[in-house]
Image (cartoon, rainbow, N blue to C red; front, side, top):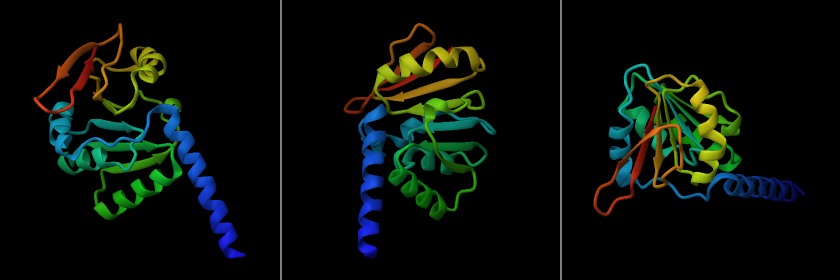
Length: 173
């Protein structure tokens, strides 16, 4: 009888996770060999707030938090399974400047963040994120997109590309 409840719980987590994967982008993590490059492009200053939207397993957020201990790092995830994995990774990291939130990133107040990092498909960002960001952000705000170039009329784009590496796009006002 107990196995039945565990099986139902597994299916619920599985289906909610699949739904969350399909809502923004398929699960493809940032390559570990690109983490240092992402960190240098993010160039987070002391006391700035960093957000990784749909953090998957919080790999980027953990790297940013570890290498920028004076900054505040937030990772947000919609999949219950990946949220739990992220929470465990953050807990065992021992870092105190990072938090993981279980929430829909599209419903989050983005005004408190100085840098936002995504690995999403461009359509979601350009239709649902960029138009609202322009109205809310500070002049020093940066938006970083791994691999995907965003179509936009709002921000100045800088493409960071190295040979045999994915491009990283930086957007500023």
